[in-house]
Length: 227
Image (cartoon, rainbow, N blue to C red; front, top):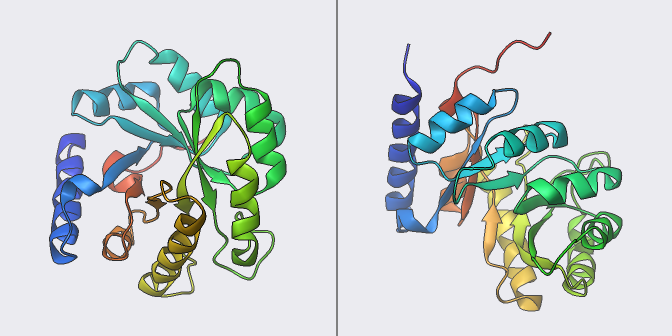
């Protein structure tokens, strides 16, 4: 059995190696540890090991863990799951970054619940499949959604996010994500983030220019059984 520290070190080494092979600096890439179903105590352990970016898929877990660990300085919470508009206020209270903005209605909801002048960093999730039920804006509508987000005063457009389809070579999928990122930067030059790559495909994502990796079980270990 490996320890949390050993698993984190192995992923850090893997990212550094992938960056080196891609001719990139490791410092260009942010590791987001995804702690779905794990307790807040594991996030505390990760923080003690130097992790400063944590991702959650569900609003309830995001709210509970961020509240439990609110005393930790410079810990940034990333919401990476599909967001319901009715939960926009709870998400905004707990997250510094939302990776999954895929429709104008959600962007409006996140903007509307702002309580001060603090900007919320957001990424546009792009659907890489032909399935409209999957999360993400269709690529053809990327610019229109971007223009809408840019019009909202409390949202800061940071870049794009995508999940590689299971039935496609991740290198090909992430090459398309990079093309969408280039399109977005034509409208928003500062939107340079590319959130792509998980446990099984982060090396391909790094090769395609990803700046943020969302890695869960390779760091945390198996998820606890859900009752």
